[in-house]
Image (tube, rainbow, N blue to C red; front, side):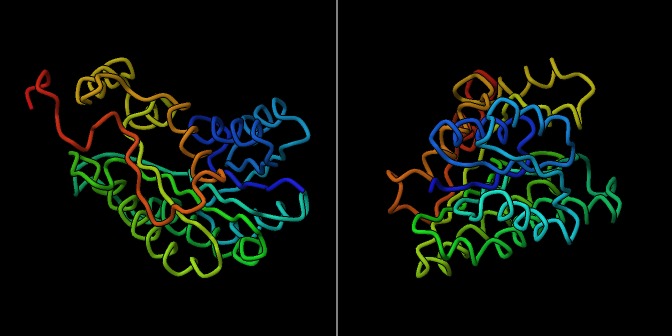
Length: 251
């Protein structure tokens, strides 16, 4: 029976691209997100290989519900891709407690309790893998990104901790840390996307933003048989962003 992957934030962007590539490589996919319409669109492309589960991973009951739905649809869970995230940039004194709690509920608690809920199924799998999706700002200071960045740094720590703890169960845990990628998330904090994208691209040594396929390829590789002896890594897929500003940007 084919392996089954849960992909959160799967209705758009990196999650949708990862769901497509996992399905193309023979996995069943549970596509998870808050909004039903984009989830149904992705599943319509993938046919019987995918099911949609509408859930807000920031809600305490959501991780257990997602795993229950995955087991009801496919009877197993072999892969978890923690991609769902929220982001709002701003200075320290601009955030409310609710915004703080929301970032950590979705970006940290969601992945934590989803993996915990899936653990019995992952332990039963002969080829289990978890892929967390962090961000380059989990490793570098970027103005205004302290809340998002610190939540992603926490996810990177969890990657290493889970990899160590779950190695004896044969469960591999790795993380990819994207740089700026052309996804809808930028519209959640910018009123001028064209200017935002141009500014992001000029700050990257390879001189372009990433695209979702750049990241989906790494999601697939980290669950593929070829990476079977790889665990506990945070892999920067960011065009060199963490290296610093390119000379052309004044760095």
